[in-house]
Amino acid sequence: MDGVRVKGRVCVTGASGYLASWLVKRLLLSGYHVVGTVRDPANQRKLAHLWSLEGAKERLRLVRADLLEDGSFDDAIIGCQGVFHTASPVVKPSFDPKAEILEPAVKGTVNVLRSCKKNPSLRRVVLTSSSSTVRARDDFDFKTPLDESSWSSVQLCETLQIWYALSKTLAEKAAWEFCNENNIDLVTVLPSFVIGPSLPPDLCATASDVLALLKGETEQFERHGRMGYVHIDDVALCHILVYEQDAANGRHLCSSTVTDNNDLVSMLSARYPSLPIPKRFPQLDRPYYELNTSKITGLGFKFRPIEEMFDDCIKSLAEQGHLSLQTAPS
Image (tube, rainbow, N blue to C red):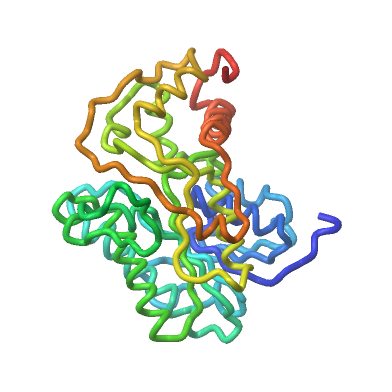
């Protein structure tokens, strides 16, 4: 790590997660001291990938915290100049979505922000939201790309039982309300469907959905119809960009390419002919939309193309033994 200029101290919640692990990696490479919150700091198997990151032994500390435990983030957050709140439940509800997804997302976010309020060293909070907080609505003009001024309809999410979108929408709105009331500098990042290499040993729901598609299973992807995609490393870098740039403010859509399912599988099957990727999907009655990412690109950011994010993802799945590749991408 010779030559890396040591920066300040920041906290990353849910540090062992799919995106958070990449954020920790990028923060360490940038020279930050990182305090990561995890459920069980003694779980060596689940945390080994974090301790193997460059700079981890010198500048990473992992501490226990629980989204629903009042004050449990105090130890991690006090003394940090920045807080990246990425932790959020993404499990598919078994019987009670309100208790399993909505309450942890909203209460957990406010719990983290209460600890931020106690921290005199705090400069800025970066919240990981989702593009689903923008596009779950049925009243927009499909000719005009959606931007950060758009909010998903809570009523529509409830009616269609889109619990993840609802949880992210309610959590981000709660965050803005709390931070405005308590004079906390908040910026939010709204990634689309995140694609790329997985650092943790266990695949998250997103990576599992991609793996199923590559193995010829269509169930998880059928419901997408049309979706924005973004490289996981780009999402991590966007978080750091909006934290470091004083000019950054408000919400920031984070997405490279929006494409239909059939165009996606056409591209993938052409690049990976040995994989049993579905050729077509049923035509869904879903609204056409594009995402306007000029706010983040206006800060100088350039997104990687969809081919690169899937190539990196598939290579990672193969290296981890989840997928068998006979040939390189075409």
